[in-house]
Length: 343
Ligand code: ATP
Image 1 (cartoon, rainbow, N blue to C red):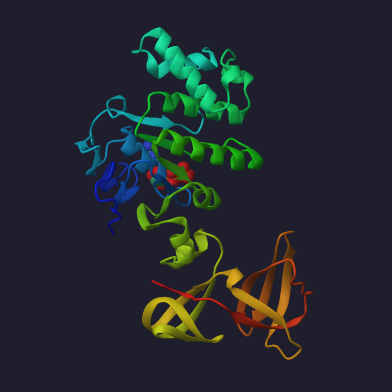
Image 2: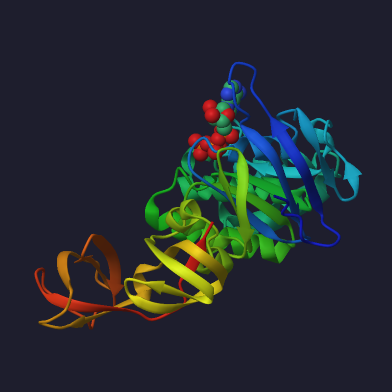
């Protein structure tokens, strides 16, 4: 499958393939993707699906067996990392411990006159909100602050593209949320495009303009967060991005006959189909004669999750705080939106 949409992409990755000699199957199997100027793409998938290997081939840290990487119209497939003009932020930030924060940020600016390098580095520290901490050493900063120094260092040389490999993995949950929004804002302000590797679907949905979902070395779906969430192409994507109920039915064009009645579909299909239904698409009505029964409940403050048994199907339903049902309550389920046929 090819996922190369922007007409004149900044980065064009064409059928990259990589097999590690002692591993039988390819770690990356013909991955193609394109990235526009200033665009933020998340490579999302479970552990071992080939995200980091793809990123490393784009960055020049791994040599592909097949395929090509074109950046700003130039074939960079076999160039070393330092000749690519691409910035990197690694999982462990890779800051120089013996250098001050300011000198870390100045590191890539060695070719500039000293005053100019100083001014640029100060400006980058101001952008990431660390203008007053330039004299400190990395170990005197919090994880989130170190992360921002790494980002300032990568952005100081004004790369058109920056690669971020799980850059928030060392931060606690609250800081992850704060830092990822800062990073998005910063990239948009500086106009740099970015590729973010993550296995965290919430992070990808919150941060990226587009998401490439990977499974077993391949890109299986690429689209905006909204497209991927609303129109997953397969059961794998439907369950990896959020939660889904999987039903079966008999489709006829844009409609499908299911155990829950005749439902509209998000795209046309015919014959026997597997369907994805999001938990928030199902409404529960208390009904003493209802065919379904609530078997489990998890209160989450802003909403609650119910497990609802109807015949052989156990469905997961997410309801707003106004809808309270005790375990054992009989209910009727209504599916109140388009369901998605899967491949
Ligand atoms: P994670 O989220 O756990 O970092 P990932 O999606 O980034 O995973 P990769 O690190 O790209 O996955 O690994 C893809 C596959 O290639 C895995 O099976 C991994 O074991 C294998 N692999 C990666 N690097 C090497 C290497 N240097 N030598 C041998 N096998 C490797």
